[in-house]
Image (tube, rainbow, N blue to C red; front, side, top):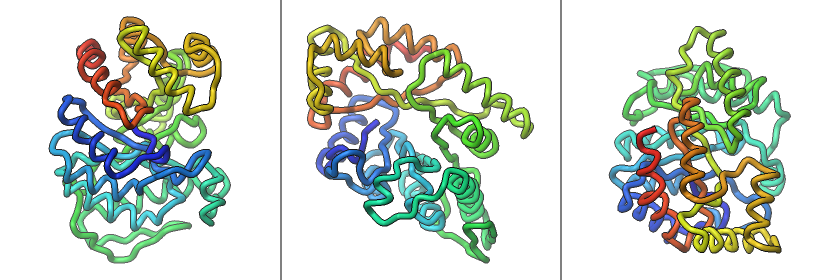
Length: 312
């Protein structure tokens, strides 16, 4: 998982994609933000996915997630269909309601109230699905509408092309997941909270007569993970420099354990934690890549961590 707003360049993006393929990793996902914090190099998400479609031949890729506030769902549906076809179905459209108001304000994009953002998300999903199906298609909602459009080319699986929805809000997000999502992506949770969210999702699925097992479950994870103490300290120091933190690497890691839901530690303890999540039904994790200029972490994920959890 690559935070695309944290200084990502075209050269590094292509390198990350090629490295993931060479290492045998299953997927590469990225965020869709203009900035968070300070303004840094941030290449456009959809343009980067077109590049990914041509630079790779095997891996799954997509966004975690695109806010419905940034672009018209008509444009999103058209771009997603074409990138999906260009990649022979490997591209995964990920959608969310949006949350980071400062990037909207700075770029002059309206940031609607919470209820409206979720209403727009639900309408956008319905509109995009209509566009992806056999045309001509029409959809009329409160915020979006199309009339007699035949969006060509279609994605590989037409209206059945999967959509990922990110987030874990119990009032709106998880009910929307239950109704529409082929994949649910959660973010950084302790085991107890994740089990609670699973229970909420199951209840939401029951209301719409859906089997929750039909929803693929993934989680984006912030982690400080390595195979030995020296590598773990080196990775920790890099993240401390990024965040402006001071003190010892060990103290910084302890702070992350106590104050957040990060996964921190050496391989054995990380495998144990991922095993706990797997028992609850988690099928895939997207681990954050903080250092774009080094292949050490992707190589560790592929060569040491992935083989240990492949059987879960």
